[in-house]
Image (cartoon, rainbow over all chains, first blue to last red; front, side):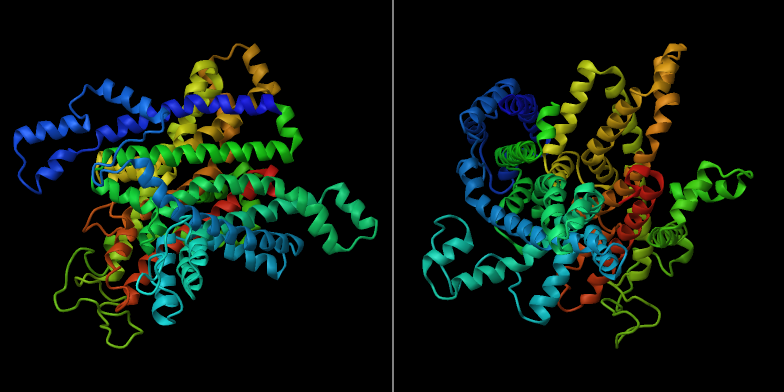
Length: 337
Length: 302
């Protein structure tokens, strides 16, 4: 097992180095000079311009800039945002809990509904429930989430008045310190009456919007994995022993059917972060997705570089963890390598 | 469409059931897939003949006719069946031309991805060694960055327009094609017929393209269908963020973004472009599921 882990870990190192190189080069290629963007706003003298360039390290040769960048990364320095002047790492992790909260609840939503939906569809193969659930899953899978978000806002917020249109908290009525950065926990810690309910209300629509695609994927995957398992001999044996159908499906079959589903759940993380960009934009959710889009518009090189670097690193780490988990629950995998 | 192409071929095929007829028989069993194919055919028809079918130009602005509702809502104008947008452009015409834009993006991405995916995937499988490692590492790298974030980054660098949307969406989706081709080619390479071909002196290039490639096609066709719908969704997402086709191009995602301010007062303006995206993508996915069941016997059981 340890050999497998080390091997898997070693494989990520070249990916990581290439990632540093590519984020650096790509961001350098973005048209528009950050200084000129600002000079357009107010007249800056040539001396001041040179001084600013020097401060930002933009007057160094490109290879030097890259080495500084790589060296900084290894020391946890992801650069300083040109706009806010605060370290990118700090800025990222201030906003990151909002994205984590959104993606985790969306994932929870997807798993809690998706696995049972898949199990029901598989155990009623070809029947009404199967066809309805799979029809819905395919629709969810095909849904443009930005439109889905707008529709939900229109119906739930504007017509029915059930949920807020955007944001994370009702700032007029509630204010609490970001102790953990998770609105659900902070609102409870604050002890303010109604704050938690308010946080939940704000979270519901973005969660549904972001969770729809993984929900559809998980439901489809659970169904097909379940169908395969249900044909196995041990399921027939369990049935022959006289165990109830519910017990056979729910315990014997489900445990084995979930192995590929776990992988799929892990693979959704990258997709969730991509979806978070759109979801956060629609709902003005103050997370890293929205921040990244804003950084592009502001030509904030370091923020972009650091942000993409951090997001990719997180995706790599999560994929690594999923692989390990997969090795743990499925011994065939770790011995095969 | 691979499905479309098979129709005349199946009809013209001589008596013994050829591969196309066998495929069509399996495909026909799946009602959803046939429905998907029909809808895709219809959308394709509208896209191709948009200039003949559309009542107006998609960019012509009718003064004094802006924000008209569709025909079943009070206050509509019979000349504009699905109403008009914020600046008085005919919704139906824009949707029809939008089908052109979306399908053009989707099909271009699909063709480029297939060609590049086959070239890279086969090279990785056949040459192995350092070439394989480099190709696979680069693909892993692309997959490590969330698709839309990478697409946005690419667009930020090369600028937002139709061609660049195609480029960005292609790069983002490429790893799946490459890995698929590589994996199927590696499996095929262990088969006896490949050894036989090698022994009989078939050259490497011929072995790659003529001997092995046709046997990797089934999963590739399925991937192409699913890749087509993904590409359309991805491109619409970019359009929605203002990073895709630029105005006044009638792109469905961009049309949605235009209507965000109007959403509350004139909800129908928002309804149609989204519905068009959903219908198209859903139809392609239905068709793709049918293709998978018909072409890939290993997956047929599920």
